Image 1 (cartoon, rainbow, N blue to C red):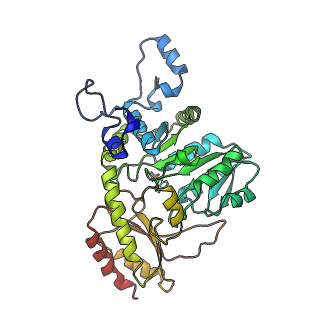
Image 2: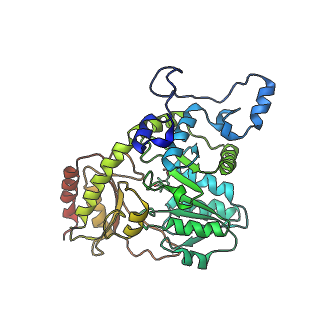
Image 3: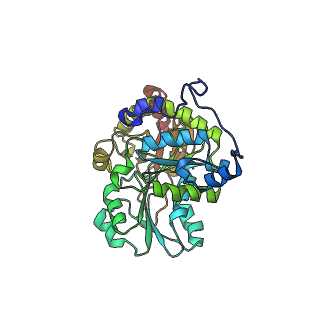
Length: 392
Ligand SMILES: *Cc1c(COP(=O)(O)O)cnc(C)c1O
């Protein structure tokens, strides 16, 4: 199928499927392999020198047909040209950081960044002589310009921020990075499909495919997408050099998940908005952090830049509740699992723990909710029964 002309839902149903003449089955197979046989010694030599984009691989670590099928699909969802799938969402973050940063340089990180991203900055990158400068995620272009370190080679963004959901003005911030010759990277996991990174000046877009693409909480996988073939060659070589590799079985599961992602996400978006809206009516609640909710923090940026939302949001409860009360509330939810990650078909709740370097935390009594495919009335009834632990 020629991809340009079809809508997102149609692409998810048709892209990256095998030609009818190959084996006749609807879906591509799982290709597991280390050795990639060559026609001759001369062909092996020639293939080894070809650009990665030609996919004339000489070893399994550069990926195979199952990887390529998923990579093509993810590149299309992200609106970019090339994708590299790697073993986890976190590996999709560390790959471009390691590929683009050198000792003596610095990286700008939003203070709201996903916790494990903060950990690699504060440990391994620091050990390699790379400094991290944390910035207020709500900075505008002038604010970023004012704190821009002369040695910054990467501007990292994540919008909305993990747990606290601050929206970033990605276009404006990416323009500052471009002016300084730095790479603009975005963790676009929350915004998948609804935010098109390459229309906003992003150079490298990161996806935890573990979330809605996998969609069933049974796979870990990441995607690094770029819109420039030269960048792809740099990142592809870095992935092979580091031995980053996704299991073809996991890629196959993610391809299967992607086929139904549009309907799952549309349903979960509506359900999450209904639950978030209901939370705003409760006397126990101080703030609902759902960027798609009118009046919520960052809503104006969301409205300007996004075509929709996912089903992950935060609820800040009144300060009068103790941590023990919040834990008792979460523990007594029956339909919500307690656990990290999100994007599956099931509801999850997780008390929020935030770390900050550049900006004050402000609140401690928040819970992050992920809304799954359960019935909305059942979900609300479940939360209502658990509220006995948070007397109004
Ligand atoms: C989950 C997540 C990741 C990491 O994905 P894993 O596959 O769990 O390593 C990265 N960024 C964000 C925003 C996430 O929510």
